[in-house]
Image 1 (cartoon, rainbow, N blue to C red):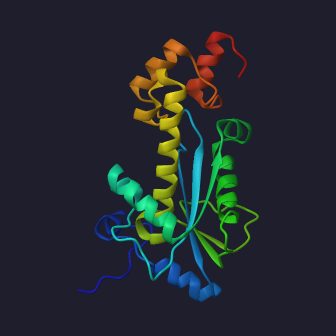
Image 2: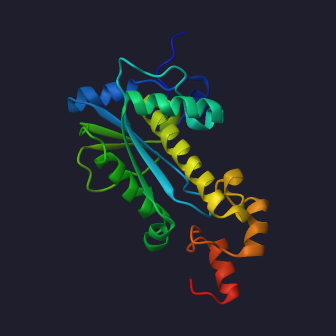
Image 3: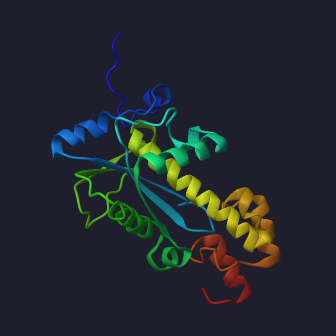
Amino acid sequence: MVRSPASPNSSLSRKKLLPTLLHEKRLARQHHGLVAGIDEAGRGPWAGPVVVAAVILDPRAIPEGLNDSKKLSEERREALYGTILSQANVGIVLASPARIDAMNIRAATLWAMRGALCALSQRPAAALFDGRDVPDGLPCPGEALIGGDAASLSVAAASIVAKVTRDRLMVRLSEEFPGYGFSAHKGYGTPQHQDALARFGPCPHHRCSFAPIRALLEASGAPT
């Protein structure tokens, strides 16, 4: 039996199929040019930035084993990261904790998505965004693709670049603020992170607008 291409909303199909260039080819035909994939890393953590990557792949040089970053080991992500940076057109933008606090997490992520797309050295004809949102003010048409990192090779590549970039940054922050264990939990609200916050309070890289951090600041009488 011949199966049709995976629907973005079909979790069963996404589990069975690897990402492809089907969405890129469709948009390339529609808009007559290159297509970028965009994804983010770090919306949920209590500390550190949101990192967004935009990637235009060379269809003649697709890295072997390219997949959603969540389905890859750290070692495999690191290997693919270098390959993607050397073979693809990549734009990366960080939304700092201060920006997240000022704008809210969704708005800051959309800001970074737009910035990553504009950071590409070549303007794409269209863009695929993982998830439900497409930012305003783009330099090209954009399309949201739920489960895009599992369906689109370009979005999968962007997910790897965003994830590795952010993980490396959190390791560096762990050296600067060794008490918090950022290298282990990457800013997520793990028991280790909660214990560190109870002992040391928030550091400058925590997101003060997030409820757990705001509650700590309010309890201590510090401004939020």
